[in-house]
Length: 412
Image (cartoon, rainbow, N blue to C red; front, top):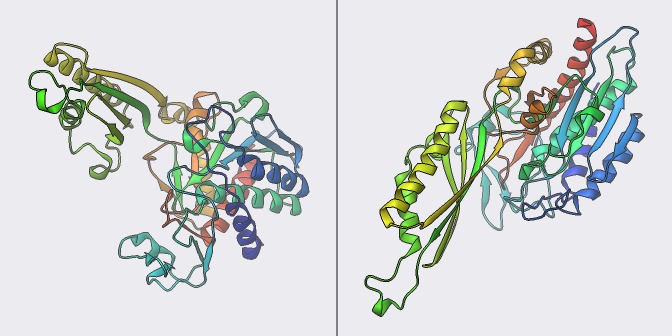
């Protein structure tokens, strides 16, 4: 029996440790405070009976649960990240526990009138009668991905305590800096030693994903000329106006707020501008590799056209690939998805197999030789004050991990 109280205690203990990562840092981990939780996880893994518990100079944690069967079984792994996003503060998280949720508005913060409402976040209604953990409205929660860590450690603890459940060798890994796109950069796949793995980094209960976006980032610099505005005719070049041309020349409806499913987008997420210099930062996303390459070409051609129009190089663009769709690497070994799907069905969980409108460590790890689909961790509304997680979803994810281990051993 997986204890609800133990799951809550473990999760709350993790989220109250600030582990926000920093994209401007060039260290690994990107923030020193990530070590606080990393070191505590090492102690906890040893305490629950895991073997070969290690943490390297970059805070990558690995541990092993030895096989308890006498036949050859593939070595599988489970991976989560312990950093939280810099999009919203993760300092001084004060979790609120809502027992037997009644389907109505949840007052997160009365002083600031911050309300978590099913009128806006209708997924809440999926969890009537369950126990929710929310924020107090002033921070994110950190279920992304401390829910995943909670589930992996709870599953390993359960398997250690119940040796009658047969399993092969199980590896677990916890990484820093996933939220800034570096979670797998220094992950030692060979040392990890798994045939395949699963990231526990999805959202709604039942999610099972082996497709994700192809991703790139684009930095655009627009160069102008500053002249006294009283004498500027024919001389001033306002970089902000040229930047506006660039923005408006991209397909207006191909943005995150107008797309869903397999539809890709251009996302302008930062503008900093003055007359002489304006900087734009975009992310480019598409599930289809051909469409992805075409999107990058559109931005390059637009840059070239505007430079031709103005008769000089007024725009510089730098486009860098970030990660690719793991589907290409997982489809040849689809049995690893089938096992996870069967585990959910045996537990009475309806699998929701869909493409991720984003990426996980698993996408990079798959291209590094470790096929790595993604499984739900249970949280909703990541990266902001309205984040919440149903405790029952964390318990379900913990059971899925145990069942995957069991099924893998049975299938030999």
